[in-house]
Length: 122
Image 1 (cartoon, helix red, strand yellow):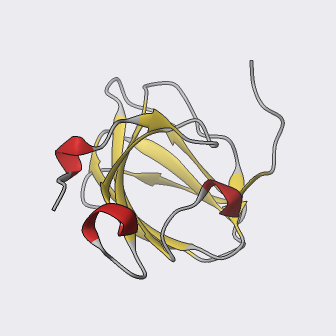
Image 2 (cartoon, helix red, strand yellow):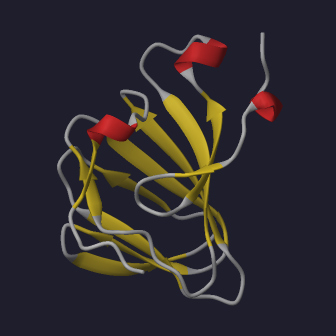
């Protein structure tokens, strides 16, 4: 069975750097994917939503602000939040270190389930 170490990091539609740790095509999961997301200090993901997927964010390291459905709160290591399908959300890394998050998605993450809801920043 291939390992997560075989996966390559990529930048997703929201602008975060992603390393998929568990993926149906690789590990055989049916209803779930797990990824590590990195947002560099001072950067934000684009506000976006997923029509089908619900997500759980678990902060591994760094400090940030998490906006879900217009509500904004500070997050840090050990914080976990549920993001329901259709809820607009974005993450901002506010500390001096990158914000590192574990992101579980069900059904598994797919680009075509992501709708960016703000203009792309240049």
